[in-house]
Image (cartoon, rainbow, N blue to C red; front, top):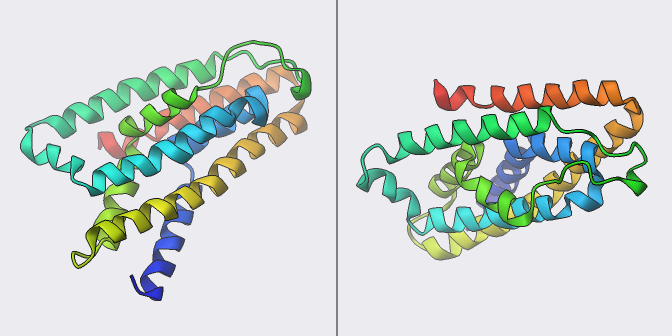
Length: 201
């Protein structure tokens, strides 16, 4: 890869990782409800799970859409169902004790495996992975290019997961009112459902 391509890849991965989407909305809600420390497995699940998804997509997993008819439509339906379920979990979550350093066990954030598995039904993740692989993996050195894309997403994920989780925790500290926190949870749930619109259109 040339310096220009690597620079463009870095900008693409950082911007696409930081912009709002299902992962970032859920991380913000997790940071608000459970704090950064309890959200670390969720953050790692995204930070490792998504780049591994990009790697497998680059190695040809996405070709299953061409081999098996209606597989992409089935994925979209599964994604929609799961996102609605997660939105309901967020909307009905009871925020833990307002002192984040002494949170009670009112609900649990996503585990590492749950967050990593979610990438496969995340519409934004599929868009990012397919776009990056198609734009930044020239046929001359495909494997080297795929690994470079994966590393770029790992670095970007470190920034984006940290930013959105800390943002959620800071919002919690600013609000400091259980009723307002409940409204915030509902707003996050609505945003999560709204993220379905591009894949359902």
